[in-house]
Length: 493
Image (cartoon, rainbow, N blue to C red; front, side):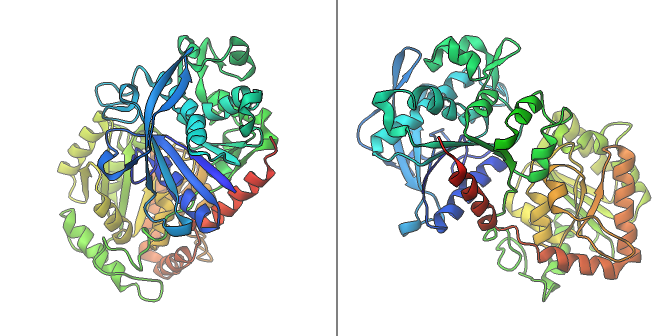
């Protein structure tokens, strides 16, 4: 099949979160299965133009009753080559993408012209296909920035006789996080070039605003999200962000496919970022990683103390209020009452960063580094005994799967992809791969960590068996890619 991925991010070119990892990893997995996969994304300043090849000529993109012109650059997606090469295309438009930041910068978190930027991008997708003479069987759009591509396909490209080349192209829209929908003033709608009849029939309207993701949900041939449990949750008001009704309406066309992980990069048997590789057959390298991790964070080197690691964005979604909230978060009590070591790598909301710095200075067994470091994140996954993810909601989650691959037992809330990937500990039989709680409260986090620490000291044989069981789990992208192929094959424009 010919498959075009339309996205705002893809590693290693541009990344703000797991979307970028998923787009590239899925593309590579599909290519390894023998499909012709290509990726299109904007050419931001963070994408080094000197490492790309420019296509001849300009790309004319009809928007807003006129036409914008852009250049197109290309490169192979790293990790692909030969017949399995995944070609990436970059739409360059200085006014829209010639700046730092993908969606915004600290002083302007959501660029004022984001609706026009991504309307232009979604229109450019079709002009690119015409320019390179390659019409996809499947147009796969990712999240709200690319959600208008299925809308343009349904209401602009398919109905017009002169554009009949897209008449057999099917569309799939993947929701990576329903909390981000692209809701803007409907004054921007004129830029699509479509009539107001489409505004209403395509589902753009949202409380007198225009909603990119909602329009995509109504227009795509098939819809999916990144875990089966999140697909169930988003049909409910508590997790649906006001789109649960639309998802129930599209229920027959909506499914959940669990993301995979890059087992070439996240693999303790060949991880270049940890002191010594290890496997289920020889876990000595994990002990070395724990020692190195304790030294890195300035904690006492103590193999008998359980280390609980975190790598997270410090935002409400991640449950940081219940953990670090001043006067009510449970982190201080956890470190005061339990014989453990807690460490964190992350960045995010200023209040949380400041609270974490204060706790780190007052507690001898809690240390944190504000920021992000790829090498250190690998060391945390390898060197920790437990990994904490108290998420309010989690569409898929990757860190719990990294943790399982490294024999680090997750402590997670029963939500989204966390529920799909972590099996709760049974202290009678020793079954399970982690520790799971239901209610997001300071007490629930405190009690579940206390349960894991109790098992560490009192059911050590269970802990060791759980580690080995966790490392046997298969989270490779090939499994996920085959399920995406089933969706593609079911699409009938």
